Amino acid sequence: ITFFILVFNVSPGTEVGIINVQDRDSETNKQVRCSIQQNAPFKLVPSIKNYYSLVTTGQLDRELLSDYNITITATDEGSPPLSSSKTVQLSVADINDNPPVFEEQSYSAYVTENNKPGSTLCSVTARDPDWRQNGTVIYSLLAGEVNGAPVSSYLSVNGDTGVIHAVRSFDYEQFRSFKVHVMARDNGSPPLSSNVTVSVFISDVNDNSPQILYPSPEGNSFMTELVPKAAHGGSLVSKVIAVDADSGQNAWLSYHIVKSTDPGLFTIGLHSGEIRTQRDISESDSMKQNLIVSVKDNGQPSLSATCSMYLLISDNLAEVPELKDISYDEKNSKLTSYLIIALVSVSTFFLTFIIIILGVRFCRRRKPRLLFDGAVAIPSAYLPPNYADVDGTGTLRSAYNYDAYLTTGSRTSDFKFVTSYNDNTLPISTPPFSVPWC
Ligand SMILES: *[C@@H]1O[C@H](CO)[C@@H](O)[C@H](O)[C@H]1NC(C)=O
Ligand SMILES: *[C@@H]1O[C@H](CO)[C@@H](O)[C@H](O)[C@H]1NC(C)=O
Ligand SMILES: *[C@@H]1O[C@H](CO)[C@@H](O)[C@H](O)[C@H]1NC(C)=O
Image (tube, rainbow, N blue to C red; front, side):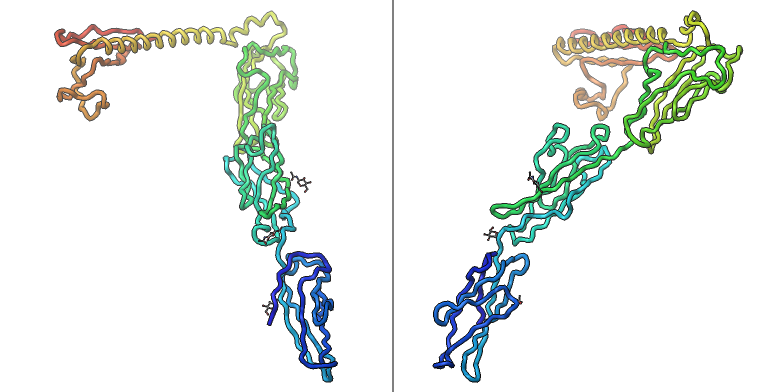
């Protein structure tokens, strides 16, 4: 027979079972000695007559060894001695004595900025050698803040798998890395847990074009550099200053002159942006020089920005009034005001038009007869549903309609209005209402 004993992780010296031995002989033949194999952490302690206690001699750890087969041999004192043995099967039951342990000391995740929300960053794994729910690991984010926002608005962790997802798109220009803590908890009661640091590193994408600080890209173009007439070749004349919010190659800027009044006169430092004369200024050089400079970053693909630089070859600021020729800003602003006036008039006209239409709609008593100027019959299939072809002629019926066309050869467009009629009114075409178009 094998006995079956179930014990919990117990300390040394704990009695885990009682063994009773019997021998039906008499005298010395009845004296019995019990022994146990030496390699198990148990011993037999004689108790009252014919009884032995099975006592542990060391700590039992289910996670090290969960089952023992203990063979107990009983030998009598007879001559020759007789013996018999029995095996006791002992199982160590689990207690929740192991917290989950992460496989790594810390985790790092690398992600390129502008990632899709929901993309997988990395996964963490923790092991718990305990049994069943005592060894079932559940992952969660420890509460914390990244840049003042809760970590849960940046990352989420799958409780069962430990896979970490980005909740939002990251911007390298906002922050380049952050840390969160992930906790692994087992399902025991009470639960045990441990935590690990996950560092997220965001890498740069070339998503910012160079920004030109000088000359100001859309400022008043009176930002003009004076170049002395006596300037020799190689003289520093001006400098284009640009920055790029990206980093590394994505922010490594190069400067090129893409257009200039006199291509041989000025050069620009490829990486410095310094504009220098390439040769001595001569009398024949035009006084007003205009350069268009392109600033490119070294990203893949690269982004660029351009600016104009106005240079005036002159020793005398009194000559500056001539600048008006270089810059046509004033003209531009006049043009802008004309455009605005034109836009406002068109909008006003359009609003009036809508109001008239609404007024006409409200005022009509019955379904008025439509006079379609030009009498174009439109197949009803092409009409929107609210323009139902009521009398079956295929003629568009509505309270109003207008026919706009551009007269060829002139920049004038005419709007023809067709007013609505009562039944007792004769359909008369109103004279076309012309609007001069600017
Ligand atoms: C104990 O014995 C049983 C059968 O007698 C066997 O299945 C089991 O593997 C043994 N366990 C150990 C730890 O030796
Ligand atoms: C888990 O451990 C607790 C003690 O911590 C114990 O009572 C329970 O039986 C264990 N559960 C299992 C499935 O072993
Ligand atoms: C995280 O674990 C460390 C030790 O690994 C511990 O000192 C700390 O209290 C834990 N933090 C939390 C919030 O559980």
